[in-house]
Length: 254
Image 1 (tube, helix red, strand yellow):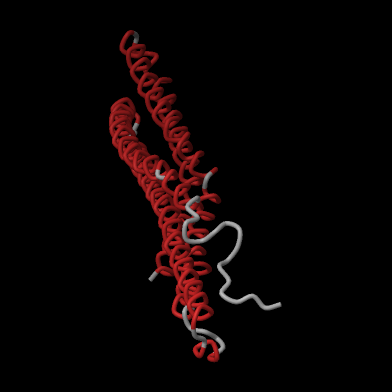
Image 2 (cartoon, rainbow, N blue to C red; image 1 turned 180 degrees about the vertical axis):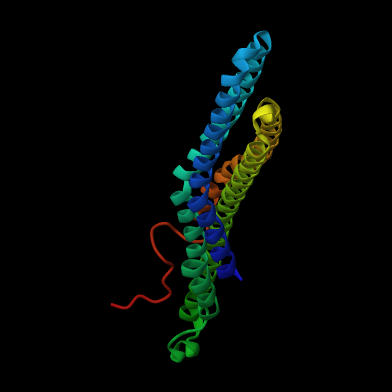
């Protein structure tokens, strides 16, 4: 189950990481095509006097709105690309805490109070009491490490999940913008260029606003989870069950 989620998170993040930058470049290429269509329109509109000047202002204003909106999205895309590798590391670290710490130590909990040398069972008196007392300390120490490793893994995984959710939402926005621009280009016949660009500017503005709001909610959750680092520090700094100096040995072999 855990391994399946690890694979899904990594695959989802890799898909976004591999495709979002080319998609952003495709967006800018389509904007350039819209600008070319606008220039062709304006080359004819200049002969219509005042109407041509009004059309030029209208088109340029909408193109500028489109570029401003895309600039906002590009900042988040670049941020996502920069943090692609660290998020993969978060995912790997989270599952390593489970596979390499929690699982093997939880298996040792069963063995903690079972003496490897069966002769220890014949001990009586203070020696027996001391041995079993420290054996119990060992079991408690193991339980403490298992609990803390689960806490650390869950903390890392929660942050990784939110990062992956952020990446997928970001890709969804980029995909939506590509669709809007493709539709605008399809509708940008010579006479309809101003209207196609106007529609595109309006739809892109709405899509970017909605997308940024969705990203803000994910970022809010992410910041809240990162804020729980205090709990992580508190848990790792608690040595009441396991001393930072040494493992509670029941028997010392000279």
